[in-house]
Image (cartoon, rainbow over all chains, first blue to last red):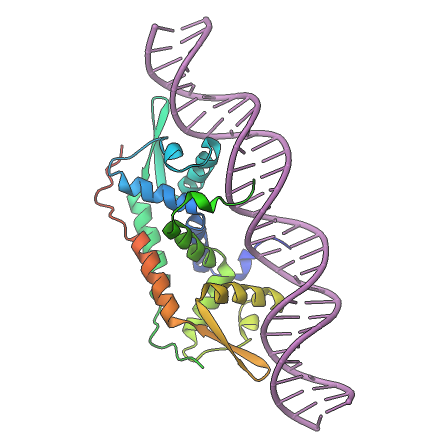
Length: 109
Length: 109
DNA sequence: TGTATTTATTGTATGTTTGCGATAAAACAA
DNA sequence: TTGTTTTATCGCAAACATACAATAAATACA
């Protein structure tokens, strides 16, 4: 109990869920939007932009990084984070494909 | 602790997170895909399609219904669920808007 | 070397999600 | 009415997610 039964679902279904989970917290949405807004990439002032504690932000960044949506490069004592454009594109293809399912056939009771 | 600090974020950011949460579980992805696949709408055989127990499916359906993505109409002893096309469209606009942020400006270190 | 700055990690408390057995509720059939 | 079918709800256990204080690790600078 309590654990998701991933084995019941297709790889694609699990992949969609994994991507969606990245966006399922407003802090991660805010981080991603901030990284898009700053056309050059930005470091730890994400912490002051979003109002959460530094370890919390660091943890959210780690999750986004592990999914491949962002990448971070060390610059001295700070780390520069930015959108991973290739992986973002791939994610967008998967998610858009899911969202774009044909509504015209839906014929409801 | 442990609770999401929604008050730190914009309504839009919270809305995106709320929609994303609907897709953040493969069972809900599978349910939605199934409802799209059956061009007429389908009742409780979602339970046999997805391999989870009936109360578990019922709970996932409730979450999707509360978000407005699906609607259910009672038909005798069974309930007929289907995609709520209007609300799905609205959701799609919000999510696509988020996913379509301009990548060309991302200029990374 | 020591100190400051920045980020990552660890540990822990708390809240949320998932899953299901048991059971209730509602509609139908005999 | 009684039994059957179908779905929803309740209640619980396990797992997972969120948040942050404390602290470690890494680099820069004096």
